[in-house]
Amino acid sequence: MALQPFVAGLAADVETPAKLAETQGERDSARSTKLDRRLPTCRTTIWLLALTNFALLANVVTALWLPSLIKGSGISDPLHIGWMTSIPYAVAITTMILVARNSDRTGERRWHAVVPALVASIGVIWMSFSLHEPVMLVFAAALCIGGALTLNALFWNLPTALLSGNAAVVGIAFINSVGQLAGFTAPAVFGWLFQKSGSPAYGLLSLGALFAVGGLAVLCIPKTAVNR
Image 1 (cartoon, rainbow, N blue to C red):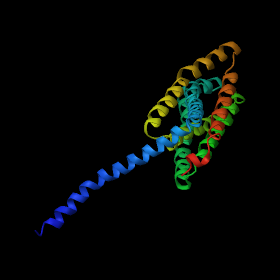
Image 2: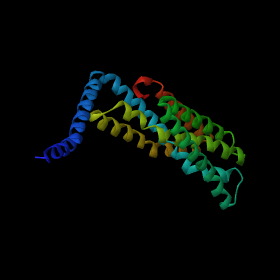
Image 3: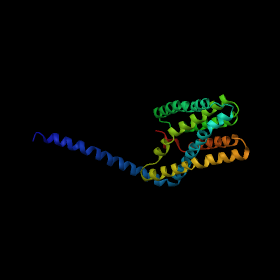
Image 4: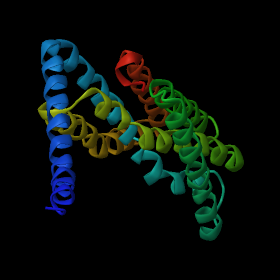
């Protein structure tokens, strides 16, 4: 008889996670229903996020071409090219941590994604005007890669804040699929422009425009939907 309260307490503890899961499921179901009611808006948001992800993953161009661009600027020593190529990524490590921590502290999501995208846009456009100046080229590349990788660290806060349940499964898969297309199309278009013009400047300018459009697309999402 004396053990009955203890056993009852254990049973309550065992049931608590199940009850919590059931409550969370009810919340997700309610949220999915809410999203279904505004399906046209939801579809528009998914397309905007897919555009941003496409722009983000187009940064593969700078990852592939930066060593060649540094070499073309007048640096011939492979060791120096390697060290100079690593500088933008060292900058990106710092900016990713600082910006992500500030976003989590303040709960603001949109501008913490938009600003890195615009910084990346400025950086890659600056690269197109610094092709024969190694120091300025690396500085501009640090802005570009730092901005793009910081956006990469923060981007998935947006769709996960907007979507849940079945909508999250389909929406995130679609956003990711569209983004992955940039892995092929961005280097292909960059190479084609390089071949036609004889200079990487036009490809870099196009990439800068894409970064700007992808970043500004985030501003079309209501801040009340993603900030928390």
